Amino acid sequence: MSRSLEGKIALVTGASRGIGAAIAQRLAADGAELVLHYGSGRAEAEALAASLRDAGHTAHLLQADLAAVDGGRQLVERLAALQLPRIDILVNNAGVALFAGLADTRAEAFETLVGVNMRSLFFITQGVVPLMPDGGRIVNIGTAATRIAFPGITAYSASKGFVDALTLQLAAELGPRGITVNVVAPGAIDTRMSAWIHGPGGKETLAQVQALPGIGQPAHIAGVVAFLAGPDGAWTTGQVVDASGGTKL
Ligand SMILES: NC(=O)c1ccc[n+]([C@@H]2O[C@H](COP(=O)([O-])OP(=O)(O)OC[C@H]3O[C@@H](n4cnc5c(N)ncnc54)[C@H](OP(=O)(O)O)[C@@H]3O)[C@@H](O)[C@H]2O)c1
Image (cartoon, rainbow, N blue to C red; front, top):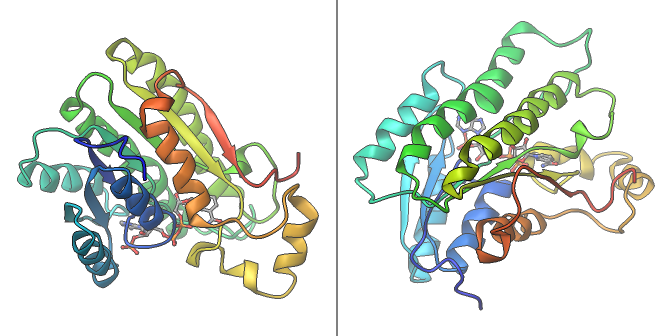
């Protein structure tokens, strides 16, 4: 097992389940100390922290509702209370989906989407960058749907377009400090968010659109994040790295 992140401290947002939990497990396995953020999934986050500690890793827990207007600021304040010396790696993973087209997108759901996928990501990054040493890493979780048009996820895709654009700007702004900023763009991944995969026609749809067979797993995304967060990713910045099994190539 590689210990390439030994001595590093990583914050993963939305680490209570799905892709975020897999990223946290992978970065811990690579040697990092983990700060696990969660929103409402306290029991799941506590179970993950306990399993990491049982395996000999260090894990801290951090709650914040990122749909709230000041959710990002709250997270940063609670992070400060942990009195960690620095954050070397920030993984902005927390996100919500909105399965709606233009006509059926409602303002309340749109507001939650903006809060979690855009506003909180921005202000968490703003608050964490000053805690980051030169050579730090920021990995944002986007979606392949900024490259490919899929029906029925109109506002969601656009919210991730914000993440792509912000990543490019931040890569240039933080480059002089040796901080890399990249996006990992998953296709359909087997989590609660993409439960449709196991519904009628789900697997057939994947077989039609993906070059690779099978169903994308959270560990597939965690592997790409680990690369970008580790020493091998040192010369890659401002990129959107597709991890979609070759969806609609
Ligand atoms: N699964 C896919 O097919 C897919 C494809 C492309 C991109 N992505 C992206 O991958 C990331 C992870 O998605 P996932 O599939 O792992 O989804 P998931 O299983 O639904 O997990 C979402 C995570 O985000 C957190 N979160 C959601 N709303 C929150 C809020 N208001 N406050 C705080 N935390 C909140 C959740 O925490 P709590 O439960 O603790 O509130 C949970 O840990 C997202 O950015 C998503 O857009 C997923």
